[in-house]
Image (cartoon, rainbow, N blue to C red):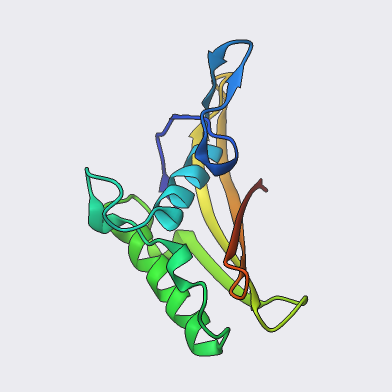
Amino acid sequence: MANYVLKDIATAEEFDLKIENGDIVIEQEPLALANLAAFRIMTEPGEWTFDPAAMLGLRRYLGGANTLELRERIKRDILLVLFKGLVFSHNDIVIDIFPGTESANTAIVIVEIKNINYIDSDGNERNNASVKSTYYMDTLTGKLTFIDDII
């Protein structure tokens, strides 16, 4: 079981700052963990100057044939980037990749971070939370969509 201490600036689609009532929104875990993982998965290697090698760039897998080999390589590469310099352990992450139902050119990537223990904004201890992030890839059109979802 892992313990995480993390607060983050909330982001909207395309990682824009989330603003409510004129203020930047700060989010509590586990959404902060989902956004941190999504940032590492979506950001291209070299785009983040503090640790350029710690990014995956999921978009780089677009345009290839949607094969089992590609899905396995994506899964392996996501695990590698999430373990690099982060507090995630192997038991905390589950990755599922499915061929999309719309066409042979689509894939759905689901990354789940489990066993999250944290203190909520009211000061209550929360145990064994998990968060799933879903990425929809269309290799033909080059479309990549990120959706976060707290369980």
